[in-house]
Image (tube, rainbow, N blue to C red):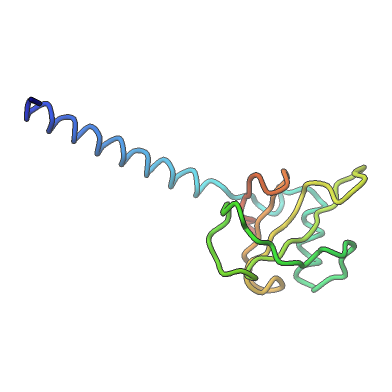
Length: 126
């Protein structure tokens, strides 16, 4: 039989651990941003083009981004669109993209990935 005092202490310990994990996860999510000025020059150029509505170099620019790995906030299909960020010396589109949420030209919701959708950082423009 479990000692009731031990059980209560164990529950408190467990609750504190869960609370710490939640706070830590929130802090990590809040830290997942990048200032526009800190992005590669090519990403800054791509964001200007997105806001102007193009022209874009790659045929796939502007296609719907599915967010299948759910690394961005959950939205209905068609909410996100992807754009290529040129990679110097790459023989193809490279791994860098900007994902725009909502109306790409005006939403203000932009995410940068430098590793082909493995991680994202929300772009802060100021």
